[in-house]
Image 1 (tube, protein in one colour):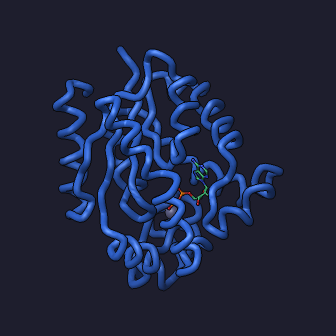
Image 2: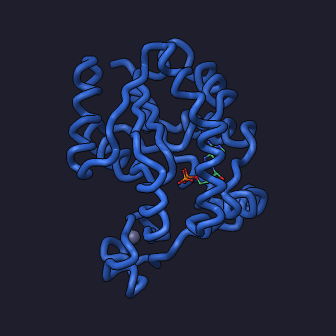
Length: 218
Ligand code: ADP
Ligand code: ZN
C-alpha cells in the first residue's frame, strides 16, 4: 500500500493539532508535529532542547537544518512506514524542498490548508491552555485550565510561553513571510486543498476526510 503522507498547513491556532490527532486515528498513521518534538526536547532538557528553548519562547523559527534532521530521523521509525500526518513541518520553502528529497517518489499526497482569519487565531491562542503531558487543548475558562490538571491524563495544564501577545504577533508575522509561500508551492504541484477552519471542529474534520476520500487516498 502506498504511503499516505499528508501535510497540514495553517496559521498557529488554526486547529492543526486537534485535526491531525483525529486524522491520525482515522487513518492509522502517526501525527508528526515538529513543535511537539521540540517541546519534548525542551522539557527533557536535552542539548537540543537547550539550543532551541529561547528561540521557541520568542516565537521565532529554529533552523531548517535542525528540523530537517529531526524529520529525517522520525521517518526512519517503523510506524512511519505507512505514512504520516505532518503538522508544523514544512514551514519554509527550503524545508518543503528537503521533504520532497527525503520522501522521493512516494512523496506528499495532499496538502490540507486550514484557513482562519488573524482575529480568530489571536483570540484562540491567547485563551488556550495545553496539557504538558498529553497535549490536550483547553480554553482558559475550562475546569482543567482553572485547576491546572488535565482530565485526560492528570498532567499539568499550562499556558505556552509563546502564547503571549508579543510572541503571537511574531509567530503570525513569520507565518505570513516564511510559510504562506508554501501554498503556491503545493498548488503548483496540484496538491493543495483549502478547508475553512472557521467552522465547528467536527465540520472541519469532515471536510478534511472528504478531501482525502475524493482523491481515493483512503
Ligand atoms: P505554532 O505553529 O502554534 O507556533 P508549533 O508547535 O508548530 O506551534 O511550533 C512551536 C515552535 O517550534 C515554533 O514557533 C518554532 O520555534 C518551532 N518549530 C516547530 N516546527 C518548526 C519548523 N518546521 N521549522 C522551524 N521551527 C519550528
Ligand atoms: Zn493530559
